[in-house]
Structure formats: C-alpha cells, structure tokens
Image (cartoon, rainbow, N blue to C red; front, side, top):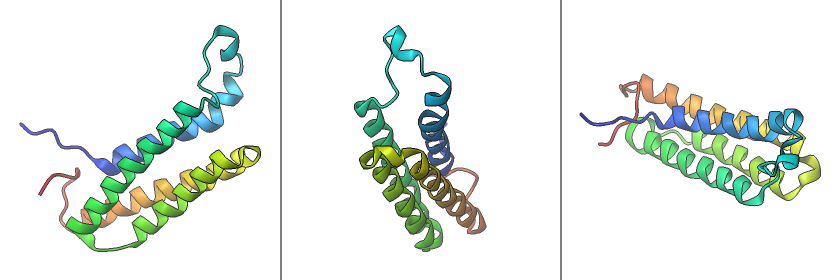
Length: 129
C-alpha cells in the first residue's frame, strides 16, 4: 500500500500553521519567553517555516502544472504570496500587514491548483506518475 500525499492540502496546512504562528501566537502567548520558550521571532524557526512552505508549495504546484493542468496562475499566486512572506521577514515593523496577503495568496494558489487537478482527472491526492 503506497502512501499518497495531498501536497496542496499539506501546503494549505503549512500556510495555516504559519499564519497561526505569525498572528495568533504573539497575541495569545506573549508570556512564553518568561518560561524560556521563544518561538516568537525566533529567526531559525521563522526561516524554517518559510523554507517548508516554499518546498511544499513548489513541489505541489509544479507537480500539478506538469502532470494535470499546464496553468501558470497557481504558481504565480504562490510566488506573489511568497514575496509577501519574505517581505514580512525583512520589514518586521509591517509584519502584521504583510502576513495576511502572504497567506491569502499562498492558500489561494493551493486551492486553485487542487481545483484544477481534480477537474483534470486527478484523484483527491497527488500521486507519483
């Protein structure tokens, strides 16, 4: 039995985890540093999440493009979102304003890619061909 991974679903989940980390965690858990836990503005964690989002997104979207639909729009949406995500790291003072378009575009790219894949006889999960 082969494990089939829905890469768009994983991309959406990764983006949502990033959004929760970037928006909700600082608002609700500002006391973590008092306990010696610092994942808020931890540069290694931040860039690690960005790298994870990038690799999952690129794999899912390129796979969908090559194998199922040959449309560039999901890839373009993803890269627009990714630019906002990187800008969020560079312009920390505007992080709160940059994270929302980043997550919106990245999740939209995965949803659109998944929709195109399912319209073009892709099963509910992406699989190797």
